[in-house]
Image (cartoon, rainbow over all chains, first blue to last red; front, side):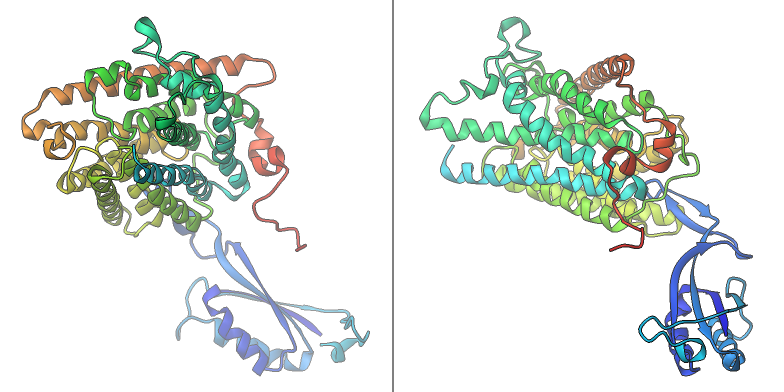
Length: 117
Length: 409
């Protein structure tokens, strides 16, 4: 089993959710985060709207899901196609992190492993 | 006074009171999330504190007759606990509704000052400060302008609804307070970003709404003057909001909501002294010019060493002074019985200038002295400790947070 975390543009989040379900993902959660990658900061108004400052941290959405190994490539394809902006993509589209998961347990039935996903 | 007038004044008083929670939302949205309760409480507690002060001794000091020597400057203690205000049953309602209406002005004026020192002023000292300030600064200036034996009243200076008494007075006190309390230690240089712009719009809208009681109630009658005041108040607020928005678009390329809200408030401030004396043309001119002036001042103040956090001096001080002077220029004899500069009465502009300068001087000096005294009293002091400022006044001073984020419901 694998944990797949993707930091993406917030405006891509709702469409990616649908794509993940189609790819066979049992569940996922999304978190509003702010942070800094290669993208430059964001300009915001300060004071009485009379001047602007640059905030380094940019709003992003973090999608987290745990899947069985056999749909790994499918899920990654879906995340890339859903999170990439335009044909070429652009700086700020995000990143995907994959790590191994030791165990998953469903609280209601105590089922373990793939059955619990 | 008549039943109709009494009915309108009861409603107008309630409208003016509603401005103070409106101000709480306006200021609350502009600060950081960790200080939203602290900022809103500065305004909210003024409703409780000053209501008591007003009925016990505030009204007496503001509207008692001070005798031939002190009379032009301050009232006496004849009306303590409002004793003796109502003497004749036939005028009882009129006498009492005036006390109520004026109370709401005394409540919002110290609350206006708080925008200058939000995110850092000690709450205990603050409560003492506004009691002293209403007693020693607000009541005398209110007496000068509105009591029948006040010296500015006798000179004939025009202040229909409190441009000098409320806004200029609060504005200069704010500048002095921001200077004495000191700068915010945490992040003030990088520019503070408003944490809840919908609150700012909600607050500005409530202020705009309540201002109809403030200005259209200040004639104490439901008549032509009141309706004209209503109309010019709305017109000036609209013109000023549009002007600020347009200047902002040219300057920052964004249609700032905070900017539009600030412009509306600046317009309301500037039309306040004028609302019983000018027509719609005057209101448009006042609305457009006050935003131009205040926008420029807001930019200047950002570069100044004084941390007037929410631009109280820029909007209420400068806007109040601008409105007082414009009242002298645009007053129309057919509206309020006094001609302004445009109708050939240059003398009135001089009277307006005297009223502005006297208010600036007295309020500035008296506020300075009050705060200096509070600063040296052991256990009081003005600025919160650095660690309290860093982690926010809400959790440390009030034991509450505006937005719970600990995972529980």
